[in-house]
Image (cartoon, rainbow over all chains, first blue to last red; front, side, top):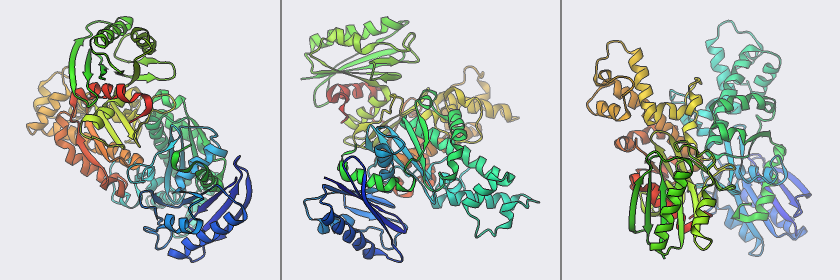
Length: 314
Length: 314
């Protein structure tokens, strides 16, 4: 019997019907537009109900862009209005009835489950997905189990302390994310432009408000020296963060994904060199660094995998 | 039926017979003296055999000061000569016969199992023991399972990257351990004395070779300003490391133990304040910081717990 995976993003909802072998039998995507609160919940419920009617399924998996509180069945999703504590489980349970298994989890848990099912890390039981985009998070699998923590907050790697001294702006999204997420690259570029007299390269021709991480990568590709300093700084931090994952979890693979990897995937070898300086020396020889194989579909595949395995890990 | 716990240290061997409720029915300790290699192995085998004859037991747990390679049943223990890859499992299995359960694990795994069984974190399923002494390591429990990693190296937190720029001396034992272990405190004190002209406090009256972490704590207690700078530096690093554990694992408790905690346990409130600046803000509200309740017996209790639960976690 097939399975349904639903990947709720901040701006769109992707759904797929998977065979037990992981092949996509059907998929569809819908923009959320200006939907908020219960409108988002009923969009999901409606779509799940329709797909489950068309494809009799054994289980439904849903991943959400934030935290899933397993004890209460509610979701906190910072980019969806009125989803501070949204009762998604009860809503979907009502829509689906009792006979279909339902599993909900965070997007970062889904990413690592997707990649170990059908992506860059097939079969791995100690694997970490490092998602670097607008934010930074990690989906962590140890001995085949997703690490959730006592309050389902585990994997909040954007908050990694990597750089002394502490500065107050780390309060908003953490030291690592402040400098090494997509917006973090832009922040570092702006700071360097402020303190560099006489820079008139490509980034100086953008207004500070419109500068993007893509601009930084484009300028870096064209040999811009200020952009190279931004990227060097990020490589050091990505390498230190990866080293910390290696020393603490001793994983067999770290998968780099999210919007920034993407373009930063060309830098994996330099990131590994940096990580090798810091990490526990046995553990670093046991780990592979790889770019996401599923890209933007990692969450969708992971949701399909959640539907298959339920809460019990792989 | 009772259980036997054996805590092998670098200099001594402690053994205890536990009731199923965790009470100590019998205990004994023997110094290893100048024993090395197979002499250490046969000391353990002999003691286990004798105890198992006197107290018919259901299981035996052994913790070792290093890494236990579960796939091969061998131990790497840096402070025991000729224990690079010592076949402890086969030796004890021969001595015990097939009818007694045998479980071997690293000391840091035992510490957290001991504290969650009979110490500072009874019943906790997401708990971390941060052991700071000559080295720094962490025993990590997530959802009741010890995190081991793909090569049994997980928890090597002494290698945490916390401080840029990288300096070559981190290569020996990692950035965190270099500054914040017992010998790390001494290294930082020596560096500060080298660069501070006119310091003639208590630490200056020691020869550099004989300076110890205890001296640093004693001077700190007496208001010595250089010692205070050493401790301030360590508090920042202990706080950053604890913050990183909080953000990654979302534990309900972090237990501070090892020789340095001990004296540094008086500093837990300041360490928590430091961690609060860096950590994921929800996760930090969900965690307790506590000093080890079992102290030097954490490994022994943990070995007893290993005997009860086998490899399967709590």
